[in-house]
Length: 319
Image (cartoon, rainbow, N blue to C red; front, side, top):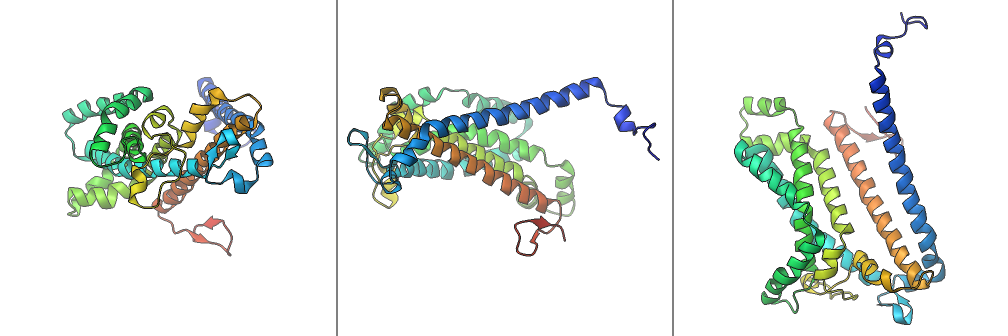
């Protein structure tokens, strides 16, 4: 029986170094929350006038022309959406397949060569990749029949390449974290290697794969200089259809980078640019929140329970 005079063994065995480490981890977590909160309140302070001074119908209009006080954000939202969707469609399958090959199929000697090369790709400056895309990739896109080489598809290809190291590295780590016993048990009952990967390893690593995809999306949404150089910077809405990916567009990040240095501080244009930054912040927050929800639900399912709603409430319980 544990009494006040005889504390539990875990309390007596805690070392001072463990207490210090826990305190540092707590301090780091609190500091991160405070920094994010300060960024949000700074954006809110500078950008709130955008939503107070401009009617929502005009703010989400189809014309972006600040010289005439036209601040329609819809072309920028559409351009960001097109570039992001194109990059995700390209990068996610390639990244996960590459991670499966590195983690489950490739021999050790080849993995030791490819893994550092992939991580080096993440360190290439985005301005260098943007220049390469402008000089080398854009002419190829134009030669394939596009009206111009500076299109949403060009930006998608470049951003897919830039997000691949993130998706591959985190996905491989997620696959590596799956216990070896899972693979051995599947192979022992007669499953092939591909059946084991598809039906055992991937479901067990689902949470990590979701995080990899979401971080890749965050990398794509937040990129600025490369997109500024290769998407054409045309603030218009392309015609609906497959051809929209081969039209010049402008993203929200490119708009902030291109125009922030030319506006007067405190002007309406200045506030609108901060309003765009606030919208980007909220989009990123929503992506992270969705990732946390997906990881939480998948993790609960993987532990063997069945999630069910209780009395039409938004809470979950184990049956």
